[in-house]
Image (cartoon, rainbow, N blue to C red; front, side):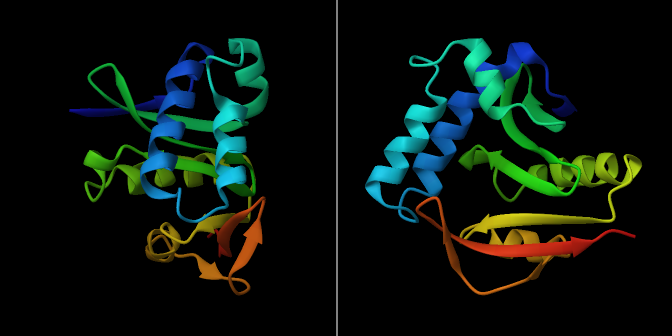
Length: 155
């Protein structure tokens, strides 16, 4: 059974490893090889202390999805921007990303947000459209990765 909860600082290494695995599996063809390596190095638990990782990836809104005790998905961001959404490949199309986004959106609204923006990877664009986002501009490159800027007004 999948459970959801807020991120804990003790999750940081597992989250960094999850982000690396999912990025490698699904997004590695959407960026230059140099930018991909830069991303891996940035959150590599072998190259960063827990304190350094927390400084790099912790955000004001942060939820994890767990299967038993294993972190299989995360969403994080600020009041008005989703910065990371990663779900293990074998758990795709099971509603986990949707549920994580619902937690994120509810928390943002509770804290006063009126809208949410995202720099969606090309793979994630259709997911965000299903969540009510609209493309705000055409395809762009952000930090060496192809993205679609998108936004959603909250009600």
